[in-house]
Length: 214
Image (tube, rainbow, N blue to C red; front, side):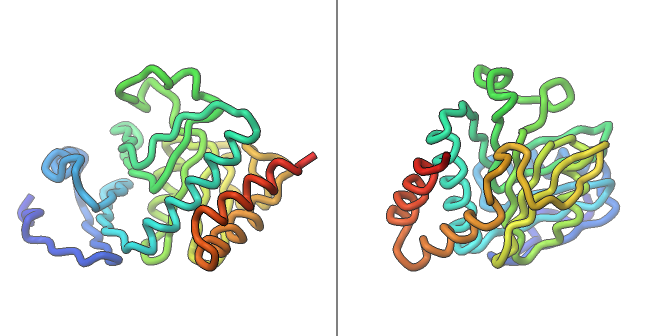
């Protein structure tokens, strides 16, 4: 590429959009950046977003991820948490690195895999994005064509649930993974509680709420 990555200085909380990036260039960027980095990438049809998260972004994604883990544990549902694993498909011209992601329905398929290739393996069942400063549409497009069944986006105020139907995301008030649970209400509620009373107190309260579910 004419622009060298070491010329980019992206402050935390900011993003850089690069356009007309070929698939080979995207692959080269992934290789050059390596795995030990703070930035996260999303690529869709020639547009590449590079974002460096703030501490608040990371705190939110950790707490929401922990809430999902606690819910799955209390409901005795096996899961495989894969964090910010890179998922990409050249034939779809798309790649994404979630804030958090989980294999749930397909956990048994992936539990023993050291590498996951979504060209042949299923995509994660649930992806979570904390979207305070970046453009959610490029992410939604990428997740959509990769076939991720459910995408949660938290914008700092509310949780949006996107459910894949007929290869398109639709907004939903209900999670298909956790049907009949008020996910859009309880996740922001206990996230807010963690800011006031601390992470452990919020997690204990959340587990107590889950235990009393019918």
